[in-house]
Image (cartoon, rainbow, N blue to C red; front, side):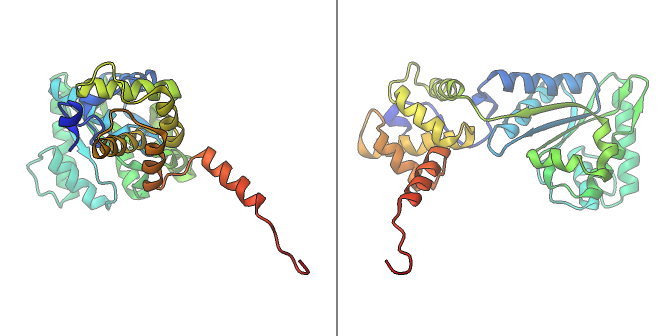
Length: 291
């Protein structure tokens, strides 16, 4: 809606996980390198965790792009609220196994055949599961058993599990200790620092067609960082709404009043705001009995 007004060739703050807009911060570079290394080296189980909105799905999209360019066989399960039967159906569908997909036995035989065939050709097969924190215990156990398939060169199936921090806590459960022991690579995404937020915003504006941007001052970016707590998805939401507000007001530079309006509309809560509210609450006069 505002692209023409600012001269953008595409939306700089879309919430879609587009690999072209991956800001390669130190931690994102390291995380992606770990994912690729784990797959290439046939390490077996690889876990990626991070708070909501820190960029896990975008990294997985980058991994998918890499696997496609390398002609790796892979399956991507994006819906993790499934039963064990549905899990095998989805695996069969994504790997395009020509079997009765409702038969776990047939799926397992066909999958094993695919894995052995790929390994004999020196190729790697990958299973990626997003939102892994939602997986039921029995599905996680089935995934663990799939990880047992191996030959002398290593694991036949490389399994990438991505989820929110509660997935780490789930893996600490006694009944998942066998799965936890098989995880050889772990990587965690954390919120941006203020410097990262500034570079992230400027990178996305540049990528969309606005190099050396002047519409968001350092003070405004500092406020965006504070109110987003460094979460990329929230940064995108604030900036997208801020640009829309500027377009509606025919402004060429954001103001703190605009940021206030946007973050209020988004119903954001951040540490400084909570502190102010707390102090205001303490300052309210109390009317006890007899006053």
